[in-house]
Length: 264
Ligand SMILES: C[S@@+](CC[C@H](N)C(=O)[O-])C[C@H]1O[C@@H](n2cnc3c(N)ncnc32)[C@H](O)[C@@H]1O
Image: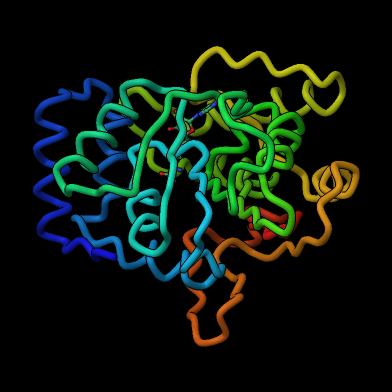
């Protein structure tokens, strides 16, 4: 399997950005930030740490965004499908994958409910910074349905500490993105969802945080055989891997971010 060099990835990114003309400052900062100058090593480390390598059955990258995780997953596994509901992001991800001539990676326009795939189709599901942008209880049920018996699910989520942090000290603001306003809306969405089960997503940036206590109840109720919850970036299935968190686990004495590794 190929390992795409930083130079090739950066060239592909620049060309894809040039061809798509991203208008939003927030989106343009975001894609530059996640592609990290073309150096995808930190994503390779994480995928290796959580044991998502050498898998034979298809791996799903749910909420694949601009596709950097999908690319790395395709380097380390037999086949990968990235899904996202944002057509513009999918186009850019497809463009980059085509330039890199990746043959075992496809991108599909799909909501997180993934009704386009059969039961037990995927051997593993990876979902980074995305489950929170959906009615996550329904999404977990969908993940369970399309995951094969014994298959692995990895996702991360924010908890209340990240919201407080963004109100006090806004993270990555842009002309068209106010992290303080986003946090307040996210808290409102969360309260509404936890009390009524309603999540009316108007844009693909609207989301929630997920309190760990609520999540644990749901993972059990849906039927996952086992699961572990750790600070984001701290799960190490492969013991020779390194801890490389992208977010603090706790802020202001509250959980800020965490990750889950569950088995069906
Ligand atoms: C914060 S981005 C993360 C993207 C990527 N996983 C990463 O780590 O860079 C969240 C992604 O989820 C997508 N998304 C939001 N709501 C969605 C939904 N209901 N169904 C599918 N994708 C959704 C967005 O379009 C966006 O690309």
